[in-house]
Image (cartoon, rainbow, N blue to C red; front, side, top):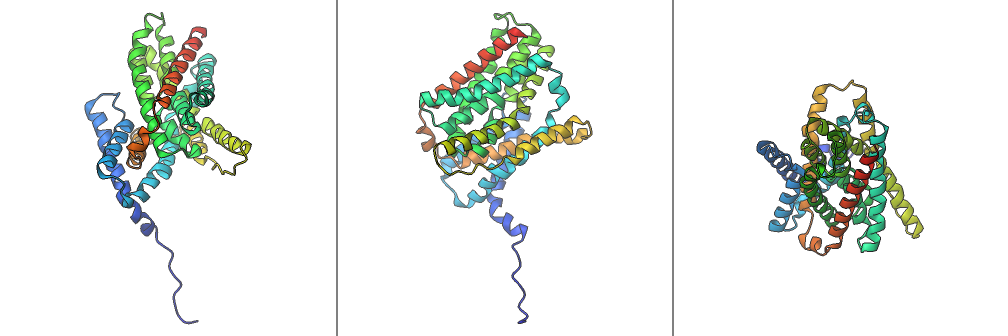
Length: 339
């Protein structure tokens, strides 16, 4: 023995150091976005959307910054997956089952129709499959959260994710304005209107905001219907992973679709929340932690996106998003009329 000490493994701190600049910027943007939403009291000011816009603006002003990239990569994947797992604490099986079989079937139907329709229509409208899948998931399930979660298995380009977020935000915001206006002409009762809003709109805040316009009874029905769609996030991601792998195999191309373990984590948290053993403090903490981490992840996406590449996607994906929004609203309305 020569007395030379073996090389020491890199410490966790050494691994974290390169990520700090990017993470600090993303979390700073997220904190400001969440604060703006709460300080303004305007529910439509989604922190995720504000963080995305801030990230895009900073990238356009600064250009690409290599030193930020390790932190951005960490925020876009591991941090996001953790946020999705924690999101499961906000949904319980009791809340979903309280809808009754008819409304629960409607929630499953709108997801089961919208996502495959996005792929089918996208192919005919000339939209890239990855972007079409993201639009379908965002429309069918829960907007921005579903888009960034689905991209963990779709692995679309950053520009596609950003475009999908923009389209879903635009279409959902239009729906937030239009649905309350249409409730009376369509002759919907308060519970019917709430279920329609919860089944048709993209973001949780959009669905709950639109449903609240119909009164307390509508707000309750809309919130729970939307939560039922959120609970379908995990099985939808698993199905999407199988779909991507199957499509690649059919084309004779070798691809490896990672098992979406975070989706199982999400379901585990739903199960845990359903036991009633989770302290109220933990559930309350998830309500501020999830938007913060989601906003940080999407800020990282904006910082990694070149707006020039985004512009090259054209208007066809926007057209697909509009068609999908009309489709889910029509399917949801037809389902409500049958309840």
